[in-house]
Length: 264
Image 1 (cartoon, rainbow, N blue to C red):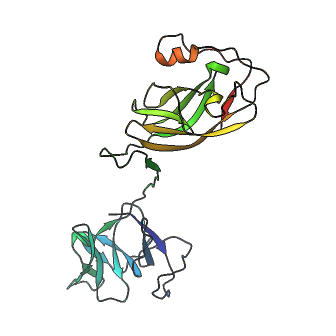
Image 2 (tube, rainbow, N blue to C red; image 1 turned 30 degrees about the vertical axis):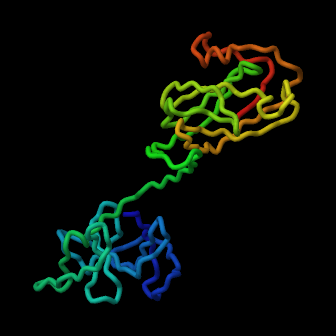
């Protein structure tokens, strides 16, 4: 079941799809609206009430706290409460306490616990059509770091949930990629000629998006870009970067005297 957002409204608020949210703390006995965080649909006006051992306390008025048990009374109804039954929300009619007029008895399904939730949204595209394996966990790139320059330019990606199944792409160009850990990946920055035919060096700035592509075609946008920046002169060709990726060369080369590009 999707989470709900809890909003405080005025006690005199009439029943409507649109409502005005009140500022302030929510107390037991307050009129509230529950809004589905996924669909945006709101439930009818409710009164939040405190629960103690499957008993609703009608006269409780202290501030509502997380992890407290509570119940949601449908305003102006005959003791009807929201109740969860088999993953569906239904109405449940409480039973008056014979000895205490300020209490009503409910079942377990009508007792709720308020907790905070986190919401994360990810975007992906199945570039080769629907896949059978889950697209999760979704890899996230937090930062890009450029090492070296010229033909030895390497880009280090830092983030979460990386795997050997992922390749780094610069726009529509696949880069030679080396998986280090679930938090770090390396790749060779593609030559500018891959984007501008006939260019042997960067003549003007060029910004390209950086993406991660899984071996089954699932594309994960990182939201980050890489910018090729102009160089004052041509470059001497070197294969050190390719050797590093293939595991045949030395460790990371030192930076060139000119910066070839930079992540944004």
